[in-house]
Image 1 (tube, rainbow, N blue to C red):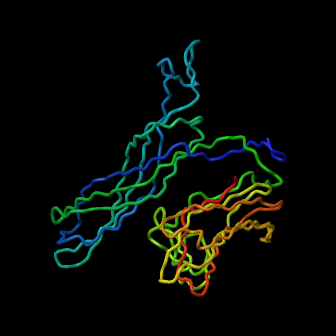
Image 2: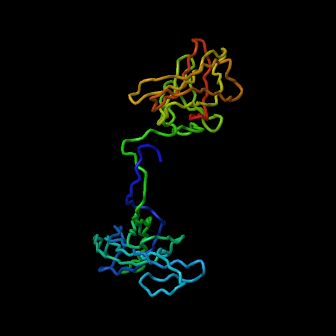
Image 3: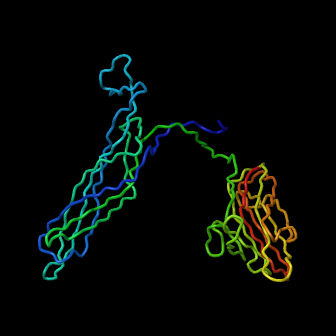
Length: 340
């Protein structure tokens, strides 16, 4: 166990099973007045309740398990766990029906429809103690369709949908760090492709003079030098980063000619190690010239360096520096950064 950790018993709600459920509730309503048409129906679901139906798992010998309160003979299987295969769901559908009578008056009437439905789980759920089980309803939604079959009879089908979450309160032993802890590994990034953009910046990145380019190595690429005679940069922060370890920044790049003059720029790939206050502790970087970056296809480049003591984060950056006559941009794709 790492230094400074304490093993503590805690009680936590643990999701042991879940299932998406759809229930159709069909009924016919008799109106108080004859109707020419139904204008609309407001509908809601209330008082949802769930009651699990418990069974005992079958032992490996094929025998059923007995209740702990029952008389148990020597050699009979003993089972403390319970199994849920079915959940009884009940509730009330509340409706406000608005309709137009024969005199073109808009009338309304309310009704409550109670329902009970047995929901068979796709996969049986094993629980340790049924007294610690709770069932939650999430993402509850309801819709209704209707048909005026006769002037005083409306056929309606209400569809109730929700997610059942089966939760068991459990006591678990966990390791805690009362005095805080240092990260044991760098949370890096792997094979980042530039598919999601907000304006002219890939999601999670910052920069200037950057634009999306559709023909990357895999999907889209980030184009540095959208205006090829102006400088450009693309950078992001990565944390946590462990101190005293070697880290590597790898990426794929190629030149993109946008005019008739030759390419003349440099691309700097940089790892900047930061402390808790955001101060720079050290930098690993490499400068690549436009002559080193292919016009005809993507090449992989790598920069690596050790993180000094006190490092907690890193900025990874690409810096594009063109000459005034440059007519090329550089494409970046499939970026990875992590501990070697």
